[in-house]
Length: 316
Image (cartoon, rainbow, N blue to C red):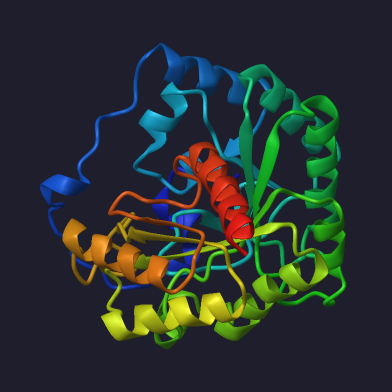
């Protein structure tokens, strides 16, 4: 039986890689260890509903803060990914069969947590003909039924090996926010995200807007992987050309020595500069800080995103 707590079994594709040094984190990166009653209550609900969260699987530094407030990002379709991105701490391998009851359990957890806004993500499922598109749609519908007042944000894989029509299945379920992360600049894709294609991901986001302009689109990248400022600014331009509404930029943190090395820790002042540049390019919302992650403060950000769109329409 495979033990995903053992690094060599969790990441067999990385076992042969040379170790990369893990530099000491600067003061602005450090966070408190998880704890407290709110954290314990959220963890209990996740366990009772037999749910996986990206907060734990991807070793998110904000898990303590978010879970203490009852916010957790649900990860559907299992905890094993068919991709082996060099930055990611989610286990790689052959996933298990989809659980037909999972959408209902997610909806039940959303109701128990009393969430105003939920983020639902998944592993990549290249083993499925539709990449898990119908499972996403079923989960969205289940949450709508059980918690009709909850707004829904999805963070999807790229559906690279599927027919283009599978995207229509997800969009037809009408999530409030469709997020798909570009993760890094195109020049680093071969070393950081080798199983993906930059322009395919960009086109995916553009097609969501073409299919349903009312859905907010969102994407994010990490910095500190070896990218240059001009390359980051070009990604911003590419996203705006695809009509992406919301941009997130966060510091890459290396999960283990076998993962992609941290090139540098980007200073908060540089993040502030990226935020100013992105707002100047027309994004409705930008979150650019060292600890920014796709679903960090997602509920509050969604309220601001909706207000920004209304203000823009009022000015038109």
